[in-house]
Length: 289
Image (cartoon, rainbow, N blue to C red; front, side):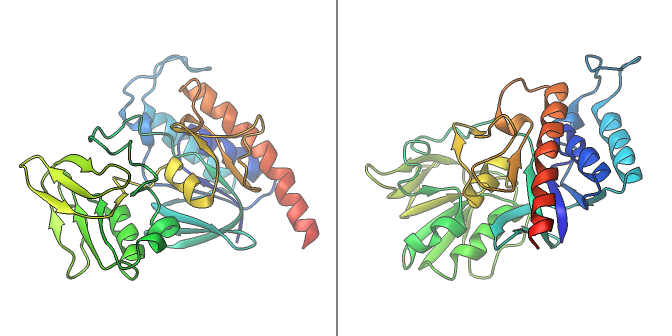
């Protein structure tokens, strides 16, 4: 079991890892990619830059620094977080356990514009299969997504519901679908219903009747993981205090996922502050054991 796990290998996650590792905490950074910095061709507004540098170079340089301090880095995609005296993180390639967790996966900064989707959130539209599948036992539902995260959510739903269909919303299917699950590739026009979800209408005019829609597009971001862990959110941001603490003891968030000035310098500072909170928390946990 680790003392500290950072979900996200961007500025916030790596910054926190530098501090926790130097404080002699066993530290793991889990990242799927380089995040938003992967698309940054030139960075010249960050402290200490004598010459512009690409986002990829900056991340790789910091990863090298982190490894030299004993940080372990793995490539994986985390689907779910649970707590059983400590945190258990379920990923595509493995399961990880830790005393503390930092959510630092950034934000997609995009919203899905489908009529009725936002209006029916909490009334048939769900973002957490583990949380809500029970409420749809014996019913017909749909999962919206086209990658591994959608299939993970589907695996939580299938043993409970009457049937489930996978909707890719016109996107390429990038994963294997469980046997017997219908796949509809047509883009969605609307999520239908008045008080609750009653069905889905597609751009070609066809429709299906469902009582629930589980949204699992792309990867499970910080917001989705926060909700699964029971952390409070506000709008598109995770709620934290000045110490980067969520309402869940041992769970922290930093970087773009908490809002504010979406800059590298801000994320690095927030990551450092999160680490300064994680270190005494872990030391207290060690003493109690």
